[in-house]
Image 1 (cartoon, rainbow, N blue to C red):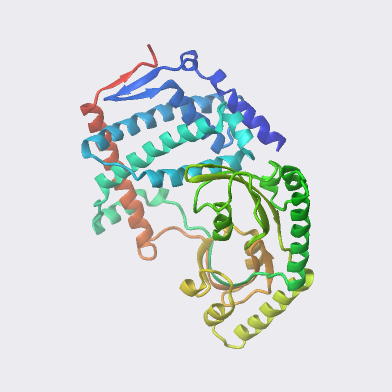
Image 2 (image 1 turned 90 degrees about the vertical axis):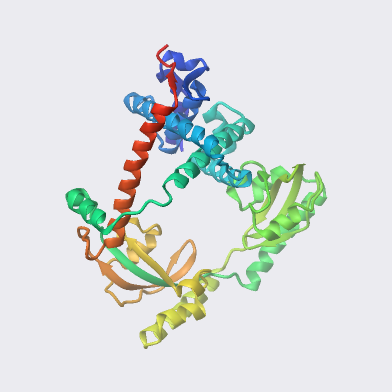
Length: 427
């Protein structure tokens, strides 16, 4: 955490590494009727540095390369924005808001809290949201323009073969991969564990009714660490951002009102309405999770052992998955997780369990953050070069992307000839 703070403090000092003319806001580049502000360039750079955890004080040359790429990228965006105006292309404001919420949550997760994000951007959350929304809206707009222009692009069989023959030696190799299926059992707390959690949240409710401070109790008792450090504060939320049981109660509260006990998949909550702003609400909560006992976990392990024995005795793994798995996608995929590169398996326990397994084998039960699993190794594929015979679709997509990028570059150069560009950075 200390290292992260040093990086973000360094990012805040990025402007010290940029040329002097960028310290004063003003127009950097004019593209047709669109302008690029010096502050806009700086904001884009802050985002890139933050997302890639680059310390600008230690990498001044990289900062300069990012600055050049940022300016070129912004010029392209403005060219496409001009084209969007000509073609009367727009984006749905609700979709922009959805993407904005996702981006803000992502940035908060990167730095740890809204407060740290405000420090990193030298701005209050209101301005960060406003600036980020403008950036996102423009990015989504230009992407829509690009898709509209090249949505019908295709590659012939001859073009795919020519692409493969030309770039065969530089194409990425297929890495070692596995095709796997699984059966998941979620550990569900016993009635005893439910009663214990309810007793705790009920005692907290009694303290609140007696006049105890909500924020202090959230800090001391809540099982939601992300909000507990802020006194249970969940910030400003819109509909669809939390589970329905929580939202139904939260949106029914008046300013300052504290809810009764609310149960969701995460446990028991007490919610307080801070304020309502139009279609959004500012709330805080106290969460007490329902923790399964050791007996609850052992019960699930024993159930999976029984399922595994059935699979080993010629029962269909797919049918057993449909009958027993708690994976929400099981009705569609029948327990089949798909094909994964071994070194990119997101859940580390899967990688450990699959080591040494042979195709057709089924693992013993093992635990992850999602619950307990048994996994079946359907196929194991060694690392190898791409070939037209076995990997036609992958190579076809690469050839299509290559053609699209080539035509896109030609189009951008044509737009640069048609739309005037004035660079004022050197002035």
